[in-house]
Image (tube, rainbow, N blue to C red; front, top):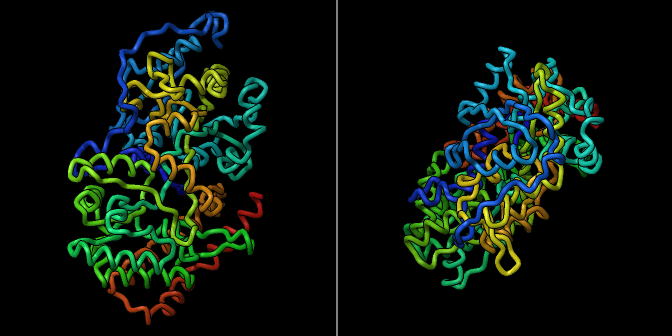
Length: 509
């Protein structure tokens, strides 16, 4: 997850993990949850009036939320009422359609009219304006936030990547909400079982099993992913992102697109294309086309978000009742890091209610808030069956607002996973052991001068490398030209980019 991704990409990353624009709408907008739907019983707020953070008078606080199509905001959402009842705060909800989030946010900052609190905005964008004085340094208010102070003391690893280039923390970090963003390897368990096949563990085994599947299903492309080679590259000993990556063993920054492991991956993918084991349109395939391949017995191995295991399986069963996607460990037991926890709140420095805002946010770090905004209330949003909690409504994000974008900071990941199948739960719990460490280049905050290098040299290198990658894989460029390609990358300022990140990381550490 890139340090400079704008809000739109962050929000899409969340929704993709739970949706699939597929052969049916069911694969695209539903979070598969417990199908138990007993009659809910209404409960009154259990927070005594005197225990509310604003016990005497109701305080109005404005909050900016991205509004997502998969769980469009409702004024009567449980989460909104729960926050207001528990705190005696009236939330003045200001919505931005998620695809226009970055644009609207920039305009609000320029106009000096940012709401009191902004939820779920990209840290890179937030810190850019924070350095200009647009948002408060949250550590200046620790004496007013005992719950957050306690959390921060135990979770600097969560807060660290959010710090700006001046070392200050301008965002309140969240945790637990984004576990569904984990990216994993997935295979068609029913097809493998039917044909006596075993999930591959090496590149050679992956190729061999794809060849066998091609023989059994001649019209298929056994391996098909809509996510490119980013997740796969670590299995070949390299790395690809928008930035260089840090080799923690050698303590240096490297650039994946010039490494031998990267070349090996391109050669491998080129072979899959030539042997028709992966779709020729792998660089243009959209989500619907990819899901169609999966549910129509035309693709059997993929890489994608963990939520796809259940959502695509649901659609697949409409075509093949035995259809079942399952998790497989990554090839060569290594995968790229998945940054899953992207929740954060920021507070406008121009707000006239800063003290009230930080007091409210401090409440979000209490056990009460975590429980309330993760599960809701028993009998109203969930029931307990055989000792396990299950949401009453299957699409609990859409119906209650629970785990919807921006509604909460510390979320019980068990609530997010409560609706997962055994295969999705296995993937979520198992995959982290194979992931590389978080690349510092993706979260370090750069100075203005460093950012200029990134926006010029870095952007040019990225564009060139992506273009060449596609040409190598699709056979439009011969691998005999590899050395010339590497030299051209180097001539475009690679050493300057690596040196910039090296110095920035020394300052960051």
